[in-house]
Image (cartoon, rainbow, N blue to C red):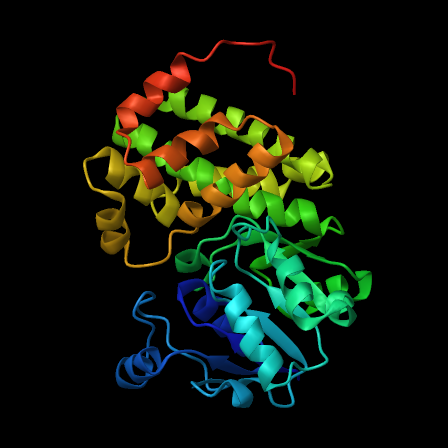
Length: 332
């Protein structure tokens, strides 16, 4: 059985670490002492009640211990913290094994996908080792064995198939897709659209308005797909439309809840505090806006979310601005 190092133990990281440990793999999760202490005292994760860690899952705050003799390294931190974590991994001695990214985002200022960040930090020789896992999956559901289907990808076909083998279970179904850029783009951008859909529900604008937001949101994602060299068809699948649907509709989605709380009157920082976990869409909306401006591509929904999050504009005012835009031939 494989020895796996897991970087991060948030709700999703813990969920997948449990999934891997339940398959009999020896998993060492690297996380902060506070989380380790809580797990020791309560035998469950603070964000996933009633899901105890299996015997083959251990925790450490020592990064070198998490990396030592590992045959697979899985990332579960945040898009904002990814570069810093992998700089530490490099300093500690990055293992020569496949690296699976599970966070979803685009780095601010550089416009790099997370896989590109890892390659830039560790070096080009690591490119063939890097892959990702993305798609419609809520930690609260996957951790309890409810059925879910996601996508795995990599720069190297052999690594992609290895990820498929390691993570697949009877209830966690994985589809390989070699378009790693498209898989990462869909996973990152859907969080922005989910914030907009949450705000739509918070303002009680109805399902028709939300359907329009999702559809036009997917159109925005496809526009960036051209800029970032992705295959547009990837966005019709699990990593695109599938992830978009669950994130925009599910009350378990922190991005959806964030948008809804803001529309109901909370300030962005108050909404983040209420949720108590990272809201990736607030980070990525700045990245996507930067990409759009650099490429000369209009992203009205992304711009709207940016103005609410970073400029404090009232969601109702943003909706007015969106509705005042001149309509054009749909063009998909």
